[in-house]
Image (cartoon, rainbow, N blue to C red; front, top):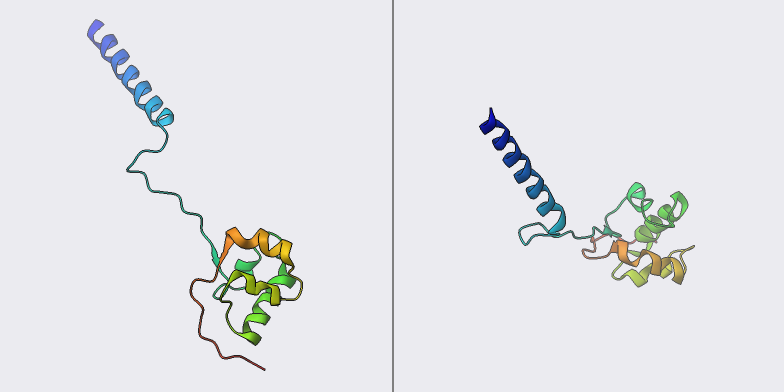
Length: 109
């Protein structure tokens, strides 16, 4: 019985130590890095654009309409050509959007 009590304390102590090491050590070298995801302005639909801060249904549709009429966005600064988006909104969107892969589209006039 005494051996069982010693074994239980040893296992409990090792479990507490392992748990504390995992919490206190922070990020380990073998952990994957966290990379923020961005939304591609040239590929995203209205639902995805509405996930952006300050973009509702009307602005999402305006972005898509501009993309159809004038072609893909080549830089985030190209958002200034969209009605209803000013410099402050574009700066707020900068960390969340990308224009990495412009999609070849036919421009509608």
